[in-house]
Image (cartoon, chains in turn brown, cyan):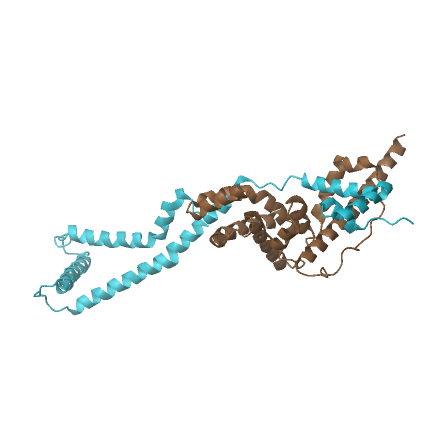
Length: 200
Length: 190
């Protein structure tokens, strides 16, 4: 993956500008997912991503391969989206009391659901919907960690947050996701039970 | 009352970031704790569900849009060049047409009958005269630049006017190109 990016970047820097389209095709969908998590709006996300790709192209000669192309590019996407969010008066991505705590954010509570519930299509659908609804403070870090499978250090590199802030955001995202999904799943199980009683 | 695993223990185990000693303690706890097993099952399944989510799809038109902003389209290059230089082209065509017209029809108006067009004829004859003087003036200037001395006559007041007109024409052409044609070109290529 990285070798392929490297060879494309080399071609672009050698003057074959059209090769950049390959880089766009390779990274646009995953980067769009990150932009959507931050901006919560397809039109804004697409515009921000377009801007990020153009900026990345012009910054390519200064790219030193200290990280992978994707990490470097996601950093640009993250910054462009954060700026767009700030312009719209959204929440700052560099705030809150993240340096402190998180480990005891919320103790686990009972998940009184049958094991089969976790394997159902319904469960996956609810999880995806709730991930989309995660606050833009937590959604991007969660996306980078779970979907892009980045390490904490890579997320630090992309977001410019401290390591502890990344851990706290991830922790809170998971706790929030767990609570909202459990709540919805619990409700749906109850609803299904009601339907079963009425049907019998 | 039974102590349960902390969220931190659960996430560390799922992410595979637990040290061996810690891991043994957590696994031992899980053997006897249904609630913590369910927690871990939940998070594992949720992570899997998120990983299996297809990314937001963007069409190939998105790539085209990005590339249009980065690399101008080849088929539009001639059009962009034409629009960028339209001011100069327009001006040159105008000047060459006028010059060509007078050069090829030197006696066009001299044989015209007198009457309503008499003034027009005189006007064109005046312009013909001015053109002749401008030609002489330019020839003189060219001869002056040559290493051999020439017997060129001194520039007249008319030659000064011609020079001023040339400068004025150039300014008009520059203005047209800079503020009209290039602006149109930018709008067209946006």
